[in-house]
Length: 193
Image (cartoon, rainbow, N blue to C red):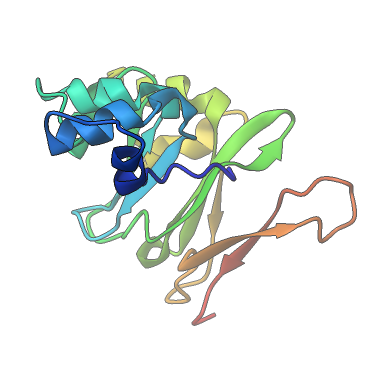
């Protein structure tokens, strides 16, 4: 967090740096390894999808479609080492409506991501240490994690709200509300509860 990855191409041109193509200007000016991990929600796609892209692997994700052009096809994310696609439990669950980023919540030394699925009245708290096991839980280690298997993992949890309360509509880091010295408390919105 806290890194500014804005590239001012006009300023670079003023310094005498020139690029052969617009795509090349972006690709050469950005140091891919400087990016933090990314979470991208697609809550209206079938069950709802969440894409986790490892920051140091963005260049690999960019080239997964055979073209290094600055365009990342999310359909290729699950096939990129260190990146995953999380899939909601059932069609219409809207997984990915709200997200809490990697490193926002740390429990027992492991970074977690939080995924809200308000139409399932649920929030999934997934430990990064459980990604590989959750991926393999459906018998295919293919980079696609079915949220159904998350709660069975040792460091991950599923929070369930009441019928129709839209638990998971919002998720926010609360800092250190309970005063335990850890800034990892989580707020879960349930606007109709």
